Length: 258
Image (cartoon, rainbow, N blue to C red; front, side, top):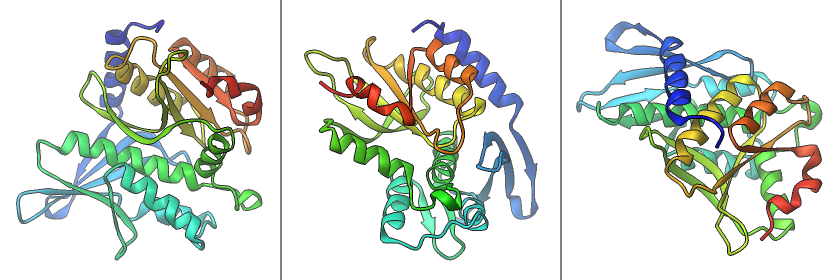
């Protein structure tokens, strides 16, 4: 990997710290605004609610699914519901049907990790299901899985990997190491921008420190609705990440095989 871990990790964590805002609300509730963007390029918000048993509930207050519904997306098929449940369960997050919220429960010690996982889940749910009306039948995560299956790629789905910083990151697939090829981790990105690029670079730099030195990250990027930024793609490459543009996937089959 071309970049120095400590320098990049410090820069990223300082950026994250400088861009987190918190606000005290009634009843001891704290609203936390994070610099991760949803599909409308708005920063995501979490609410930390103290519980009577001494634990804390961290919730999106229904914002993730509400924003999808306002965009015209509906969970009107078994396929969509299954994918939603799959994504939520992968992050260890609960879905509260009473107000369509995503939430986790934790102790004060568990809060940093749980907050990080809920934030990742919110971005992932929005990312996987944000579709234009013209493309409403397509669910990108499902399409990637189908591509792997059709090409007989041997993979493991849903990994939670701990990095050097002790933060955990969810990855969609992994291709185990073989006698010919190194371990390849796969991250599926439906809506790619500079913030997602920065987060992906930090997460992989952090994760890679705890993996085999020859392990690789394949970032599969959807360009169906928008061509990804060339600068952001270049940034991924600088950190040893292999970007695979979805429209060019056929020319990248060798990256998945063996």
